[in-house]
Image 1 (spheres, helix red, strand yellow):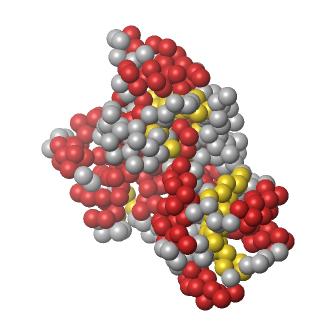
Image 2: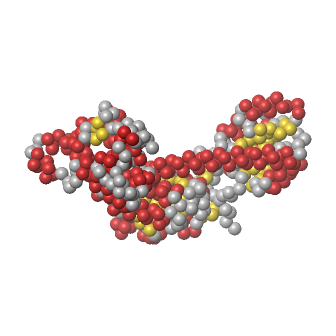
Image 3: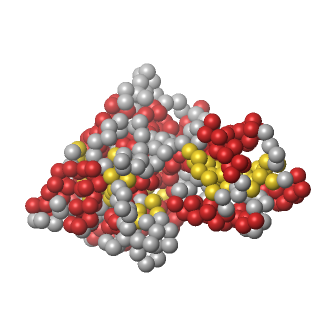
Length: 481
Protein backbone atom coordinates (compact mmCIF):
# COMPACT_ATOMS: atom_id res chain seq x y z
CA UNK A 1 0.00 0.00 0.00
CA UNK A 2 1.08 3.58 -0.65
CA UNK A 3 1.16 5.57 2.61
CA UNK A 4 -0.82 8.76 2.93
CA UNK A 5 1.38 11.84 3.16
CA UNK A 6 -0.40 13.80 5.79
CA UNK A 7 -2.77 13.11 8.65
CA UNK A 8 -4.86 16.12 9.67
CA UNK A 9 -5.02 14.94 13.31
CA UNK A 10 -2.93 16.63 16.00
CA UNK A 11 0.45 14.87 16.22
CA UNK A 12 1.54 14.01 19.78
CA UNK A 13 4.98 12.80 20.90
CA UNK A 14 5.60 11.43 24.42
CA UNK A 15 9.23 11.27 25.59
CA UNK A 16 9.89 9.17 28.72
CA UNK A 17 12.25 6.33 29.60
CA UNK A 18 9.52 4.43 31.49
CA UNK A 19 7.29 2.32 29.29
CA UNK A 20 4.40 2.45 31.76
CA UNK A 21 4.31 6.26 31.61
CA UNK A 22 4.53 6.26 27.84
CA UNK A 23 1.67 3.76 27.61
CA UNK A 24 -0.51 5.86 29.92
CA UNK A 25 0.16 9.05 27.93
CA UNK A 26 -0.45 7.32 24.60
CA UNK A 27 -3.81 6.06 25.85
CA UNK A 28 -4.79 9.57 26.96
CA UNK A 29 -3.65 11.05 23.65
CA UNK A 30 -5.51 8.52 21.54
CA UNK A 31 -8.69 9.12 23.54
CA UNK A 32 -8.47 12.74 22.36
CA UNK A 33 -8.04 11.69 18.74
CA UNK A 34 -4.31 12.43 18.52
CA UNK A 35 -1.85 10.76 16.17
CA UNK A 36 0.52 9.45 18.87
CA UNK A 37 4.18 8.46 18.80
CA UNK A 38 6.66 7.67 21.56
CA UNK A 39 10.39 7.98 22.24
CA UNK A 40 12.31 6.39 25.13
CA UNK A 41 15.18 8.92 25.10
CA UNK A 42 15.97 12.51 24.19
CA UNK A 43 18.20 11.31 21.36
CA UNK A 44 15.43 9.19 19.87
CA UNK A 45 12.99 12.10 20.20
CA UNK A 46 15.30 14.56 18.42
CA UNK A 47 15.86 12.06 15.63
CA UNK A 48 12.12 11.57 15.17
CA UNK A 49 11.53 15.34 15.00
CA UNK A 50 13.55 15.52 11.81
CA UNK A 51 11.30 12.95 10.13
CA UNK A 52 7.83 13.68 11.50
CA UNK A 53 7.26 16.99 13.29
CA UNK A 54 4.71 16.73 16.13
CA UNK A 55 2.32 19.49 17.16
CA UNK A 56 2.53 18.59 20.87
CA UNK A 57 5.48 17.23 22.84
CA UNK A 58 5.32 15.93 26.43
CA UNK A 59 8.72 15.07 27.95
CA UNK A 60 10.02 13.88 31.31
CA UNK A 61 12.31 16.60 32.64
CA UNK A 62 14.40 14.25 34.78
CA UNK A 63 15.43 11.69 32.17
CA UNK A 64 19.18 10.93 32.39
CA UNK A 65 19.77 11.71 28.71
CA UNK A 66 17.78 14.93 28.80
CA UNK A 67 20.71 16.97 30.17
CA UNK A 68 18.35 19.05 32.23
CA UNK A 69 17.10 21.94 30.07
CA UNK A 70 19.19 21.37 26.93
CA UNK A 71 16.42 19.36 25.29
CA UNK A 72 13.89 22.23 25.42
CA UNK A 73 15.83 24.83 23.37
CA UNK A 74 16.71 22.14 20.82
CA UNK A 75 13.04 21.30 20.31
CA UNK A 76 11.98 24.96 20.20
CA UNK A 77 14.63 25.60 17.58
CA UNK A 78 13.43 22.72 15.41
CA UNK A 79 9.70 23.26 16.05
CA UNK A 80 9.05 26.94 16.75
CA UNK A 81 5.26 26.57 16.35
CA UNK A 82 4.81 23.37 18.37
CA UNK A 83 3.83 23.28 22.03
CA UNK A 84 5.99 21.51 24.65
CA UNK A 85 4.99 20.47 28.16
CA UNK A 86 7.17 18.75 30.75
CA UNK A 87 6.59 16.15 33.44
CA UNK A 88 8.39 16.61 36.73
CA UNK A 89 8.47 15.50 40.36
CA UNK A 90 7.55 17.71 43.31
CA UNK A 91 11.21 18.37 44.05
CA UNK A 92 11.86 19.93 40.64
CA UNK A 93 9.01 22.42 40.35
CA UNK A 94 11.46 25.34 40.38
CA UNK A 95 13.22 23.80 37.40
CA UNK A 96 9.86 23.34 35.69
CA UNK A 97 9.10 27.03 36.15
CA UNK A 98 12.49 27.83 34.65
CA UNK A 99 11.62 25.60 31.70
CA UNK A 100 8.39 27.54 31.18
CA UNK A 101 10.42 30.74 31.01
CA UNK A 102 12.39 29.12 28.20
CA UNK A 103 9.26 28.44 26.20
CA UNK A 104 7.55 25.37 27.68
CA UNK A 105 3.75 25.62 27.57
CA UNK A 106 3.14 24.10 31.03
CA UNK A 107 4.23 21.32 33.36
CA UNK A 108 2.52 18.45 35.16
CA UNK A 109 3.80 16.86 38.37
CA UNK A 110 4.14 13.12 38.91
CA UNK A 111 2.20 11.16 39.89
CA UNK A 112 -0.72 12.60 37.93
CA UNK A 113 -4.29 11.51 37.27
CA UNK A 114 -5.44 10.59 33.77
CA UNK A 115 -8.10 13.31 33.73
CA UNK A 116 -5.46 15.87 34.75
CA UNK A 117 -3.22 14.76 31.88
CA UNK A 118 -6.08 14.84 29.39
CA UNK A 119 -6.97 18.37 30.49
CA UNK A 120 -3.37 19.50 29.87
CA UNK A 121 -3.30 17.85 26.46
CA UNK A 122 -6.66 19.37 25.53
CA UNK A 123 -5.42 22.85 26.45
CA UNK A 124 -2.29 22.30 24.37
CA UNK A 125 -4.44 21.10 21.47
CA UNK A 126 -6.56 24.25 21.71
CA UNK A 127 -3.42 26.41 21.73
CA UNK A 128 -2.06 24.65 18.64
CA UNK A 129 -5.43 25.15 16.96
CA UNK A 130 -5.36 28.87 17.72
CA UNK A 131 -1.86 29.19 16.29
CA UNK A 132 -2.93 27.38 13.12
CA UNK A 133 -6.08 29.47 12.85
CA UNK A 134 -4.15 32.71 13.29
CA UNK A 135 -1.69 31.64 10.63
CA UNK A 136 -4.56 30.82 8.28
CA UNK A 137 -6.25 34.16 8.98
CA UNK A 138 -3.03 36.05 8.29
CA UNK A 139 -2.67 34.23 4.99
CA UNK A 140 -6.35 34.80 4.21
CA UNK A 141 -6.19 38.53 4.99
CA UNK A 142 -3.02 38.82 2.92
CA UNK A 143 -4.70 36.99 0.06
CA UNK A 144 -7.82 39.16 0.27
CA UNK A 145 -5.65 42.28 0.23
CA UNK A 146 -3.89 40.97 -2.84
CA UNK A 147 -7.22 39.99 -4.36
CA UNK A 148 -8.47 43.56 -3.98
CA UNK A 149 -5.61 44.52 -6.29
CA UNK A 150 -7.49 42.95 -9.22
CA UNK A 151 -8.89 46.34 -10.06
CA UNK A 152 -10.69 47.39 -13.18
CA UNK A 153 -14.00 47.57 -14.99
CA UNK A 154 -12.80 46.76 -18.50
CA UNK A 155 -14.50 43.84 -20.17
CA UNK A 156 -11.27 41.80 -20.25
CA UNK A 157 -10.60 42.02 -16.51
CA UNK A 158 -14.26 41.36 -15.72
CA UNK A 159 -14.03 38.19 -17.81
CA UNK A 160 -11.10 37.11 -15.63
CA UNK A 161 -13.07 37.74 -12.43
CA UNK A 162 -16.05 35.79 -13.74
CA UNK A 163 -13.76 32.86 -14.55
CA UNK A 164 -12.32 32.99 -11.03
CA UNK A 165 -15.84 32.69 -9.67
CA UNK A 166 -16.51 29.60 -11.81
CA UNK A 167 -13.23 27.85 -10.92
CA UNK A 168 -13.03 28.53 -7.18
CA UNK A 169 -14.94 25.40 -6.12
CA UNK A 170 -13.43 22.98 -8.64
CA UNK A 171 -10.29 20.83 -8.50
CA UNK A 172 -9.69 21.12 -12.23
CA UNK A 173 -6.13 21.98 -13.33
CA UNK A 174 -5.87 25.60 -14.48
CA UNK A 175 -3.33 27.11 -16.86
CA UNK A 176 -2.93 30.88 -16.40
CA UNK A 177 -1.09 32.64 -19.21
CA UNK A 178 0.00 36.22 -19.52
CA UNK A 179 2.97 38.52 -19.54
CA UNK A 180 5.10 39.11 -16.46
CA UNK A 181 3.52 41.56 -14.04
CA UNK A 182 -0.10 40.94 -15.05
CA UNK A 183 -0.96 39.29 -11.72
CA UNK A 184 -0.99 35.56 -12.45
CA UNK A 185 -0.20 34.51 -8.88
CA UNK A 186 -2.83 36.96 -7.60
CA UNK A 187 -5.46 35.22 -9.72
CA UNK A 188 -4.27 31.79 -8.54
CA UNK A 189 -4.64 32.92 -4.92
CA UNK A 190 -8.10 34.28 -5.71
CA UNK A 191 -9.19 30.90 -7.10
CA UNK A 192 -7.87 29.16 -3.95
CA UNK A 193 -8.95 31.53 -1.18
CA UNK A 194 -12.42 32.25 -2.56
CA UNK A 195 -13.35 28.59 -2.80
CA UNK A 196 -13.91 25.49 -0.71
CA UNK A 197 -10.16 24.86 -0.31
CA UNK A 198 -9.57 28.23 1.36
CA UNK A 199 -8.62 26.68 4.71
CA UNK A 200 -6.19 24.29 3.08
CA UNK A 201 -2.57 25.14 2.19
CA UNK A 202 -1.64 27.30 -0.79
CA UNK A 203 1.96 26.70 -1.87
CA UNK A 204 3.51 28.90 -4.57
CA UNK A 205 6.61 27.73 -6.44
CA UNK A 206 8.60 29.87 -8.86
CA UNK A 207 10.02 27.25 -11.23
CA UNK A 208 12.13 29.85 -13.00
CA UNK A 209 14.07 30.80 -9.86
CA UNK A 210 15.05 27.26 -8.85
CA UNK A 211 18.19 25.64 -10.19
CA UNK A 212 17.44 22.58 -12.38
CA UNK A 213 19.46 20.40 -10.00
CA UNK A 214 17.40 21.49 -7.00
CA UNK A 215 13.85 21.66 -8.30
CA UNK A 216 13.16 17.93 -7.89
CA UNK A 217 14.35 18.11 -4.27
CA UNK A 218 12.07 21.09 -3.63
CA UNK A 219 8.97 19.65 -5.28
CA UNK A 220 9.19 16.03 -4.13
CA UNK A 221 11.46 16.23 -1.06
CA UNK A 222 14.36 13.94 -0.25
CA UNK A 223 15.45 11.30 2.24
CA UNK A 224 18.32 11.61 4.69
CA UNK A 225 21.58 10.68 2.97
CA UNK A 226 20.14 10.99 -0.55
CA UNK A 227 23.04 13.24 -1.55
CA UNK A 228 25.97 15.09 0.00
CA UNK A 229 24.60 17.54 2.56
CA UNK A 230 21.27 15.76 3.08
CA UNK A 231 21.72 15.42 6.83
CA UNK A 232 18.00 14.97 7.42
CA UNK A 233 14.90 14.16 5.41
CA UNK A 234 12.89 17.04 3.99
CA UNK A 235 9.26 17.21 2.96
CA UNK A 236 8.59 18.34 -0.61
CA UNK A 237 6.34 21.21 -1.62
CA UNK A 238 3.76 18.80 -3.08
CA UNK A 239 3.50 17.23 0.38
CA UNK A 240 3.28 20.69 2.00
CA UNK A 241 0.29 21.47 -0.25
CA UNK A 242 -1.53 18.25 0.70
CA UNK A 243 -5.29 18.76 0.48
CA UNK A 244 -4.87 22.26 -0.96
CA UNK A 245 -3.40 24.00 -4.00
CA UNK A 246 0.10 24.06 -5.45
CA UNK A 247 0.83 26.95 -7.81
CA UNK A 248 3.66 26.35 -10.26
CA UNK A 249 4.70 29.69 -11.72
CA UNK A 250 6.73 29.86 -14.94
CA UNK A 251 6.06 26.19 -15.70
CA UNK A 252 7.67 26.63 -19.11
CA UNK A 253 11.11 26.91 -17.46
CA UNK A 254 11.15 23.24 -16.41
CA UNK A 255 13.54 20.89 -18.19
CA UNK A 256 12.11 18.04 -20.26
CA UNK A 257 13.36 15.54 -17.67
CA UNK A 258 11.59 17.38 -14.87
CA UNK A 259 8.46 17.70 -17.01
CA UNK A 260 8.33 13.90 -17.27
CA UNK A 261 8.56 13.51 -13.49
CA UNK A 262 5.90 16.17 -12.93
CA UNK A 263 3.59 14.44 -15.43
CA UNK A 264 3.92 11.17 -13.53
CA UNK A 265 3.16 12.91 -10.24
CA UNK A 266 0.01 14.43 -11.72
CA UNK A 267 -1.20 11.23 -13.36
CA UNK A 268 -0.46 8.85 -10.49
CA UNK A 269 -1.17 11.39 -7.73
CA UNK A 270 1.97 10.32 -5.92
CA UNK A 271 5.53 11.52 -5.49
CA UNK A 272 8.75 9.72 -4.62
CA UNK A 273 11.27 11.70 -2.56
CA UNK A 274 14.80 11.76 -3.93
CA UNK A 275 16.65 8.79 -2.47
CA UNK A 276 13.41 7.16 -1.29
CA UNK A 277 12.08 3.72 -2.08
CA UNK A 278 8.38 4.37 -1.44
CA UNK A 279 5.97 6.67 -3.24
CA UNK A 280 3.76 8.99 -1.20
CA UNK A 281 0.15 9.68 -2.07
CA UNK A 282 -0.66 13.36 -2.66
CA UNK A 283 -4.00 15.05 -3.22
CA UNK A 284 -3.54 18.60 -4.49
CA UNK A 285 -5.15 20.95 -6.98
CA UNK A 286 -2.62 22.17 -9.53
CA UNK A 287 -2.61 25.69 -10.96
CA UNK A 288 0.22 26.61 -13.31
CA UNK A 289 1.22 29.87 -14.94
CA UNK A 290 3.50 30.88 -17.78
CA UNK A 291 4.50 33.90 -19.80
CA UNK A 292 5.46 31.64 -22.71
CA UNK A 293 3.35 30.23 -25.54
CA UNK A 294 3.23 26.58 -24.43
CA UNK A 295 1.34 25.47 -27.52
CA UNK A 296 4.18 26.69 -29.71
CA UNK A 297 6.72 25.27 -27.27
CA UNK A 298 5.28 21.75 -27.43
CA UNK A 299 5.06 21.95 -31.23
CA UNK A 300 8.78 22.82 -31.26
CA UNK A 301 9.59 19.96 -28.89
CA UNK A 302 10.54 22.27 -26.00
CA UNK A 303 7.58 21.28 -23.83
CA UNK A 304 6.04 17.83 -23.47
CA UNK A 305 2.82 17.49 -25.43
CA UNK A 306 1.25 15.10 -22.91
CA UNK A 307 2.05 17.44 -19.99
CA UNK A 308 0.66 20.40 -21.92
CA UNK A 309 -2.70 18.71 -22.47
CA UNK A 310 -2.69 17.47 -18.87
CA UNK A 311 -2.34 21.03 -17.58
CA UNK A 312 -4.39 22.86 -20.18
CA UNK A 313 -7.79 21.60 -19.00
CA UNK A 314 -8.97 25.14 -18.32
CA UNK A 315 -6.97 28.10 -19.59
CA UNK A 316 -7.23 31.66 -18.33
CA UNK A 317 -5.56 34.56 -20.13
CA UNK A 318 -4.56 37.74 -18.30
CA UNK A 319 -4.43 40.71 -20.69
CA UNK A 320 -1.45 43.10 -20.53
CA UNK A 321 -2.10 46.57 -19.21
CA UNK A 322 -1.69 48.12 -22.68
CA UNK A 323 -4.80 46.21 -23.75
CA UNK A 324 -6.91 47.61 -20.93
CA UNK A 325 -5.75 51.19 -20.55
CA UNK A 326 -9.21 52.25 -19.43
CA UNK A 327 -8.35 50.60 -16.08
CA UNK A 328 -5.26 52.77 -15.50
CA UNK A 329 -7.17 55.54 -13.70
CA UNK A 330 -8.77 53.02 -11.31
CA UNK A 331 -5.42 51.34 -10.67
CA UNK A 332 -3.77 54.68 -9.98
CA UNK A 333 -6.39 55.50 -7.34
CA UNK A 334 -5.98 52.06 -5.80
CA UNK A 335 -2.20 52.41 -5.52
CA UNK A 336 -2.50 55.96 -4.16
CA UNK A 337 -4.77 54.63 -1.42
CA UNK A 338 -2.22 51.88 -0.78
CA UNK A 339 0.93 54.02 -0.61
CA UNK A 340 -0.56 57.24 0.76
CA UNK A 341 -3.53 56.29 2.98
CA UNK A 342 -5.41 59.27 4.29
CA UNK A 343 -3.77 61.67 1.82
CA UNK A 344 -5.60 63.50 -0.97
CA UNK A 345 -2.93 63.25 -3.64
CA UNK A 346 -4.11 64.37 -7.05
CA UNK A 347 -2.73 63.48 -10.46
CA UNK A 348 -2.05 66.16 -13.06
CA UNK A 349 -3.41 65.85 -16.58
CA UNK A 350 0.12 65.70 -18.11
CA UNK A 351 1.01 62.85 -15.75
CA UNK A 352 -2.07 60.89 -16.77
CA UNK A 353 -1.36 61.59 -20.42
CA UNK A 354 2.13 60.14 -19.99
CA UNK A 355 0.66 57.04 -18.42
CA UNK A 356 -1.86 56.60 -21.20
CA UNK A 357 0.81 56.95 -23.91
CA UNK A 358 3.13 54.45 -22.26
CA UNK A 359 2.84 50.75 -23.21
CA UNK A 360 3.74 49.39 -19.73
CA UNK A 361 5.97 46.43 -20.63
CA UNK A 362 6.07 45.55 -16.91
CA UNK A 363 2.27 45.74 -16.74
CA UNK A 364 0.45 46.32 -13.43
CA UNK A 365 3.59 45.62 -11.39
CA UNK A 366 5.39 48.41 -13.22
CA UNK A 367 2.47 50.79 -12.67
CA UNK A 368 2.50 49.98 -8.97
CA UNK A 369 6.22 50.71 -8.74
CA UNK A 370 5.68 53.93 -10.69
CA UNK A 371 3.05 55.21 -8.23
CA UNK A 372 5.12 54.14 -5.21
CA UNK A 373 8.10 56.08 -6.61
CA UNK A 374 5.99 59.15 -7.36
CA UNK A 375 4.52 59.17 -3.84
CA UNK A 376 7.97 58.80 -2.26
CA UNK A 377 9.65 61.51 -4.36
CA UNK A 378 6.75 63.91 -4.85
CA UNK A 379 5.37 66.67 -2.63
CA UNK A 380 2.53 64.43 -1.33
CA UNK A 381 -0.03 66.78 -2.87
CA UNK A 382 0.14 66.45 -6.65
CA UNK A 383 1.86 63.95 -8.90
CA UNK A 384 3.13 65.65 -12.03
CA UNK A 385 4.87 64.29 -15.09
CA UNK A 386 8.25 65.15 -13.57
CA UNK A 387 7.58 62.78 -10.66
CA UNK A 388 7.26 59.81 -12.99
CA UNK A 389 10.13 57.50 -14.01
CA UNK A 390 12.40 58.71 -16.85
CA UNK A 391 10.86 56.31 -19.37
CA UNK A 392 7.50 58.03 -18.95
CA UNK A 393 8.93 61.55 -18.59
CA UNK A 394 10.72 61.26 -21.93
CA UNK A 395 7.36 60.77 -23.60
CA UNK A 396 6.10 63.95 -21.97
CA UNK A 397 9.17 65.95 -23.01
CA UNK A 398 8.81 64.72 -26.58
CA UNK A 399 5.18 65.74 -26.64
CA UNK A 400 6.08 69.28 -25.54
CA UNK A 401 8.21 69.70 -28.67
CA UNK A 402 5.27 69.03 -30.96
CA UNK A 403 2.35 71.29 -31.77
CA UNK A 404 -0.77 71.17 -29.59
CA UNK A 405 -2.73 69.82 -32.57
CA UNK A 406 -0.22 66.98 -33.04
CA UNK A 407 -0.26 66.16 -29.33
CA UNK A 408 -4.04 66.03 -29.39
CA UNK A 409 -4.08 63.71 -32.42
CA UNK A 410 -1.48 61.40 -30.81
CA UNK A 411 -3.49 60.87 -27.64
CA UNK A 412 -5.65 57.76 -27.36
CA UNK A 413 -9.37 58.33 -27.06
CA UNK A 414 -10.65 59.44 -23.65
CA UNK A 415 -7.18 60.22 -22.20
CA UNK A 416 -8.39 63.31 -20.39
CA UNK A 417 -8.34 62.36 -16.71
CA UNK A 418 -11.76 63.71 -15.87
CA UNK A 419 -13.47 62.22 -18.92
CA UNK A 420 -11.81 58.87 -18.32
CA UNK A 421 -12.67 58.83 -14.62
CA UNK A 422 -16.26 59.84 -15.19
CA UNK A 423 -16.87 57.17 -17.81
CA UNK A 424 -15.18 54.49 -15.71
CA UNK A 425 -17.07 55.30 -12.51
CA UNK A 426 -20.40 55.70 -14.29
CA UNK A 427 -20.00 52.37 -16.10
CA UNK A 428 -19.12 50.51 -12.89
CA UNK A 429 -21.88 52.22 -10.90
CA UNK A 430 -24.42 51.13 -13.51
CA UNK A 431 -23.06 47.58 -13.59
CA UNK A 432 -23.48 47.12 -9.83
CA UNK A 433 -26.89 48.83 -9.88
CA UNK A 434 -25.87 51.52 -7.43
CA UNK A 435 -24.18 49.27 -4.87
CA UNK A 436 -21.60 51.76 -3.50
CA UNK A 437 -19.60 49.20 -1.54
CA UNK A 438 -19.22 46.88 -4.53
CA UNK A 439 -18.48 49.80 -6.85
CA UNK A 440 -15.68 50.97 -4.55
CA UNK A 441 -14.13 47.49 -4.49
CA UNK A 442 -14.29 47.15 -8.26
CA UNK A 443 -12.75 50.57 -8.76
CA UNK A 444 -10.14 50.03 -6.07
CA UNK A 445 -11.01 53.26 -4.23
CA UNK A 446 -12.31 53.99 -0.77
CA UNK A 447 -15.94 54.76 -0.06
CA UNK A 448 -15.08 58.39 0.67
CA UNK A 449 -13.28 58.76 -2.66
CA UNK A 450 -16.24 57.19 -4.47
CA UNK A 451 -18.71 59.68 -2.94
CA UNK A 452 -16.49 62.60 -3.86
CA UNK A 453 -16.20 61.37 -7.43
CA UNK A 454 -19.97 60.80 -7.71
CA UNK A 455 -20.59 64.35 -6.52
CA UNK A 456 -17.84 65.85 -8.67
CA UNK A 457 -19.04 64.22 -11.89
CA UNK A 458 -22.74 64.68 -11.09
CA UNK A 459 -23.42 60.93 -11.29
CA UNK A 460 -26.86 60.16 -9.77
CA UNK A 461 -27.03 57.63 -6.96
CA UNK A 462 -29.37 54.65 -7.22
CA UNK A 463 -32.27 56.44 -5.55
CA UNK A 464 -31.99 59.23 -8.09
CA UNK A 465 -30.36 61.74 -5.78
CA UNK A 466 -26.81 63.03 -5.59
CA UNK A 467 -24.22 62.35 -2.90
CA UNK A 468 -24.40 64.71 0.09
CA UNK A 469 -22.40 67.92 0.05
CA UNK A 470 -18.82 67.72 1.25
CA UNK A 471 -19.60 69.75 4.36
CA UNK A 472 -22.22 67.24 5.51
CA UNK A 473 -20.23 64.10 4.78
CA UNK A 474 -18.08 62.68 7.60
CA UNK A 475 -15.26 61.42 5.34
CA UNK A 476 -12.88 63.99 3.92
CA UNK A 477 -9.71 62.10 3.04
CA UNK A 478 -8.79 59.20 0.78
CA UNK A 479 -8.60 55.87 2.56
CA UNK A 480 -11.12 56.51 5.36
CA UNK A 481 -14.46 54.82 5.51
